[in-house]
Amino acid sequence: MPKLNMRPDKNPMPSQDPAVRAHNFDEVARGYSEEAALDEAARCLNCKNMPCVSGCPVNVRIPAFIEKIREKDYEGAYRVITESSSLPAVCGRVCPQETQCEMQCMRGKKGEPVGIGRLERFVADRHNNSDAGETVRPEPNGHRVAVIGSGPSGLTCAGDLAKKGYAVTVFEALHTAGGVLVYGIPEFRLPKAIVAKEVETLKKLGVDIQTNVIIGKTLTVDELFESGYEAVFIGTGAGLPNFMNIPGEGYNGVYSANEFLTRSNLMKAYLTDPVTPIMKGGSVAVVGGGNVAMDAARTALRLGADKVYIIYRRSLEELPARREEVEHAEEEGIEFHLLCSPTEIIGYKNPDDPRDPKNGFVTGIRCIRMELGEPDASGRRRPVPVEGSEFELPVDTVVMAIGTSPNPLIKSTTQGLEVNRRGGIIINEEGLTTRKNVYAGGDAVTGAATVISAMGAGKVAAAAIDRALSGQ
Image (cartoon, rainbow, N blue to C red; front, side, top):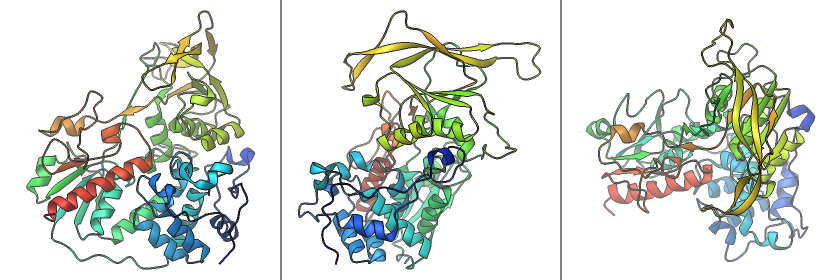
């Protein structure tokens, strides 16, 4: 057993050189070596009250899996993680550990916290690369459950129920399972092969995944119950993009971040001769400051943009994206225009243009500088326009990354399902909606949030479904 490592800083994550990675879609972070993982695991104090576990939305037994790493029992560590998480290789890459488990780590009081996410990734990757251990399919319990959506909440709910012997069918509207994990998060942050591997593990548990099925169109919730499903979980995410409703948003070259990233991630717009091209060179402005904005900006750079700007109406301190993603974007040469807000997208219309002249084409974006005033309802200081500070940026493409809302399709085709004023499905503390035996969780309830919070909602609903159907 290695001695306790009291070094105050965590082991750095190896990564591609910024000058190289800005021009490819290969994963930026390379992952810990065994030596680095063992050294980092030795930093864990194995606290008796385990504060890090309370910071994890799915309650992974973090000290227990780290202890297994210290013992070099990597499969044991993987089993500990998968008691609570169906997607460890995903969580190890995209979870905001710095605001969750690592924020509670005692080592962070006088230095950097233990690199919990990096250790989780190490364990999951080692398992996936070795194909160690067989997946044991539980004995069927005779109950059937339908899960709508194969994003993080749906996959988690499906996995937890499958482990208890439920016959689970996941219905996915797109042609590939994974939801936001495949259409929303770029390859350089989350390789699609990783998601496919996690999905394959669920299939080995007995989860049936049916793609190209749009619930509300292909089938309705009522028809699912009529065909023998005893409970339904809705994990359809928040795929309806928001816009600013400023002049010029109808020009060609203006995209929602959802469309922009889906075309790149799922429809392979990065290919030399893509079926669905997005852009070729030029300058790109991405409006927004969250992780999706960082993903869109860094994707645009890799698609060949000459210059990429992030336009965000608050300061760096209020920027909601993960600090690591912001640092990576800055290292890659993306230019931040903070305390700025767009007022108009500039374009031109040419009726003689052989392309589509109906709406015209983007030539720039007009912005106004902001200053921070009193806090708004979110608790953050409200941006206030500075009179006479307007300026223009010449750009060829604008990506709106200012949030998304739940798609209203299921609500409009399902009686008895109530939503709030933002379109989120109303649930109780167990994930039960206002319709009997219909549960929901993740972004379909909350609006756009984190992968791990969606997974937590899937776990809560799975436990409630089990209690209801097993007679508990």
